[in-house]
Image 1 (cartoon, rainbow, N blue to C red):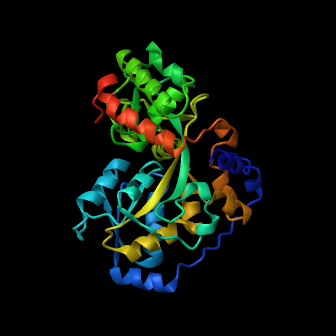
Image 2: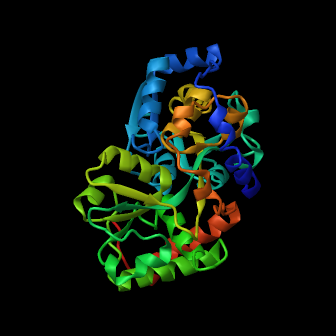
Image 3: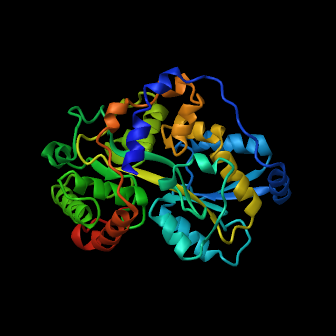
Length: 367
């Protein structure tokens, strides 16, 4: 996966010559008809300001005329999997058809029999290392862990993880999720640990727990889930979250307050999220049509507009499908040169250590 990342990043200059004209392949007519007969799709954990999902959902509804029932936009990956488990026998509006979860949660859901296989029409252009061979899950986008900083309050902007431990950042630093359940927060803890030189996996997780224990002991950690609102109000003037969420938050605030997004100089952890269809989906055809849309040129460019690098990025570039104006809004490729992708085994080991050790080692009840 690291090799794939390097290939994707090296294409940044090629993007400068990309066309501004997009052409979108249509989903199979039989699938469209079957989905329209079902009439609805139920999603979960898709905030409109996350990865461009607001516009993506609107585009899907406009294109196919289906109703989209959106459950708990602030749910974490574990919550999404639990929602499938809790609604196995429920065909009502609380049963999700699809999930968008951190990479480590995809294989776990498959192993538990919670997903069903489906290979989208663009399957071959999704890198092999970003998908389950049987089609139970496939990567949709990736980003890197970053620092979102309210510069009205924080005058000396931190540049790396070690900076956050300084006294000047008292009562300032928050995570964007609960590390006992949120994939984003779990990976943030591992990233902090990796910045100390610890190897990805259990070692980085243990180092990350110690780091947050020190941050909490110093009085710098705020046990509140950071969002644009808490950032703007000053309750959490520094939020550790995905670069695409931070950049979207910056745009949403429109300079009030001014926000700087920093990719740390060490511990540049990149994380892949994956899509999967519930084995118990009440609207299986609508779920498949949603996947077709997400992995079409239109859906993948939608992720890019939300500052996320989609899994078909390389194929889009090769075929000149990325508008130049989209490229111009993305961070420079140099910021991602030190990015590393924890493997599935490393993520699983880290998740085990962090979810079970957070309360004992850090002792901060994030909510």
